[in-house]
Image (cartoon, rainbow, N blue to C red):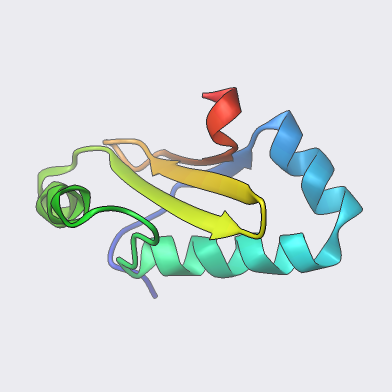
Length: 92
């Protein structure tokens, strides 16, 4: 169980294609989603991590970043926790 509700989990087309092409990447993304839900914000600076900690109880947007080899993914949970999106930064 995580620190907050993820809501509906969706991903962009780029993430979806990468998941279909690479089982290791799919495992990585699944792990990152679990990390995000547990408050492990990944490769964020300390200020951004503190902002996420503040945002949990205030129902503000939550943002995580994780690196996989030459790829970076972002995970964003909306303020109302209705949707969590997994995307590449270039798709933002």
